[in-house]
Image (cartoon, rainbow, N blue to C red):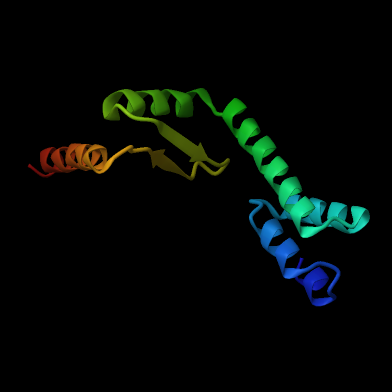
Length: 120
């Protein structure tokens, strides 16, 4: 990607769009397609969005049962949408949605009370 940018085979806009892809394989595949089809920045952005949508769909379908169960338990406990994103190395992140300042405070209070129980 850097080489193509330095050689001016792609623009900064192309590179910026490509960098939003999570894997270097996807970035390289997309770069090859951009160069082969001579895509504009706008077309590149559309290509990247399409790849991200496919990636998200794959992640949703392939979540292990344990992860889906944990999501459901957190969703029921916190009474809001919870998503867990994990990789093959058992690392990841948890996304907890809130819909207002009061909702955020309710969730924060839950964790604060949980912490107080743990410490006493």
